[in-house]
Length: 138
Length: 138
Length: 138
Image (tube, rainbow over the protein chains, first blue to last red):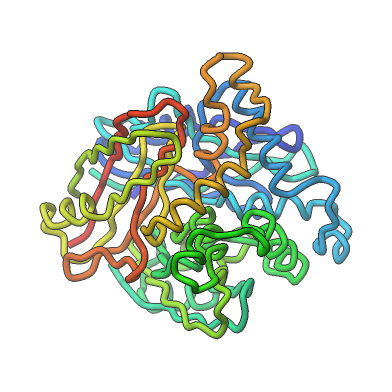
């Protein structure tokens, strides 16, 4: 088992960051040829998934996430704590914090138009997010 | 590999139950210091994710899930089977039944404001849910 | 570790295909009695989850996914690339590409009314989807 922390810095709410190069680098460092890579983001206002990493899909994702948890809604989290990121918590919980990707011949087995991404969902910009990367296999 | 069933009893639709203490207890029992914990809920009207476990986020989640699958909509599942939980099935499938969390030094590596939760999505209250917890590592 | 590619062929947008028999066959072939099965779909317009596999839930899922990413919306992905599947990318990213199911006594530990499914979300029908199935355990 090989473990590494991946850091990703966002600039604004809705940023989507391609983690694939850092994950592939971690797989190469681990020496694992055949196995699984697990990612877990240690925050409740960010999430992980896969997308085709191109500006169109990125824009479409931002709008769809806003429909799931509208900016204009009243959030009990905001009312209670006054930090304004109620919508961020909801979006992150619906998408989820973890992902497992297979590895073969030392390479991530993503599809041709499929990248692993971090969704920055917090309204407070400029955060450095910690993603625990755990690689198992042979 | 260490495996244990975690039980969680809900009282009403929309209940969100913090599984983190039971998971941490299972990790301690397993003796695993460094590895992964996998959870799987064996039901199609409940789901797993992580949230900041505080009453505001819990209320916000319940409302967002109702927007995903409104109470007032007509569900083909209800029409066919008459059990009234069509919306529960939809919500559960969108959030998902599984989760994997890393462990280091015998502790779950969740963020400070991040807990592992079961979402009770069924309209029929008072259910005991079975969650299979599988711990791998060293 | 045992790895196998599962193929699933869809006929139209919104098809939901039960992967449980193929997964169970892979578990039996692997000889693993106690462990975990990981699935990963190598496409950005398909997704994996669990549902009660009956026609009512299948119809309800299709409608809920359309509410998440309406047919009539304008997608930046479509504007840029002209391939019409902007909504497919959004739905797939929200549901997610991976799933892990526990195995005990050589059997998948799904609930009685819980099947593992592929969601075909692309507007272009008749695709064969590749799902990487990785089985670990004893």
